Image (cartoon, rainbow, N blue to C red; front, side, top):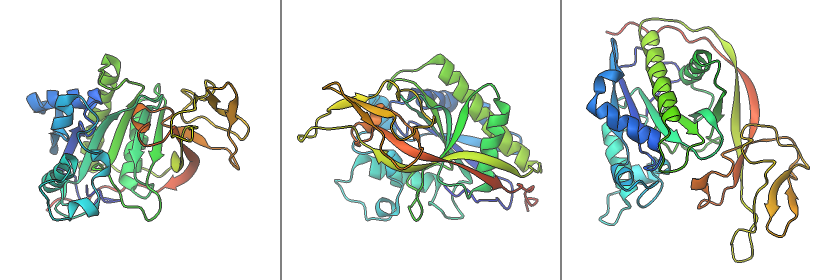
Length: 310
């Protein structure tokens, strides 16, 4: 909740959160395991706190109880006077803000890793608010280098002047996995990525310097809804030629939807985009069939060793 672009000193207060969405079972199950066996998260220079972010949703195996917790960490909710009829996730966001924050303050945790699953074919996806955080960009690059056999992408979700709405410094998204289902392969993959994240923080704390490099990432542009009837009901589905092609180029004139009446709907945008979260089950309620993104390449400066701790 307070990840500096370039930390001034070693990172001491680290948290790993799961169940921000209560039916994304890899993170839920791992945090429950680590609460029983916290030594797995221990490193010589720090230890990470496992946090069950949305316990009511996890107990019910639902994405959320009243509203999406992953959209509740905004100042409008965090600073408002509590009311008896506040949605559960707003109350829980305030509790997490006290535990891990206050958000953006110097008293907040140095780094928060939030664990997610998606039903979309996203593979291993590292979700950051923007590209300005040098530490997080180096962490993403480290994870990519540690897993050369695994296709992974960096996704930047925050638009200019938009407040960050999630709890994390970095979101780890693995898919495809159905909601409410635990897959052993993704459980193991997420467990490995968390361990590697903690190893990177340990290397940094010990004084390792990381050289500059060039990063490839995808930045969110727009939300694309399904075709709908006048009554708002679905009139088509994601086209088979688009399904499961997350992070692949979509060019003008290529099909994006197949109408129930049989005809294809073609992409009419001005240029090539890269769809992500294609046909994500949780986004039907949000009116999103996929998110269009642009591909970026940008330099990331070297990450210097932290100043010695007092």
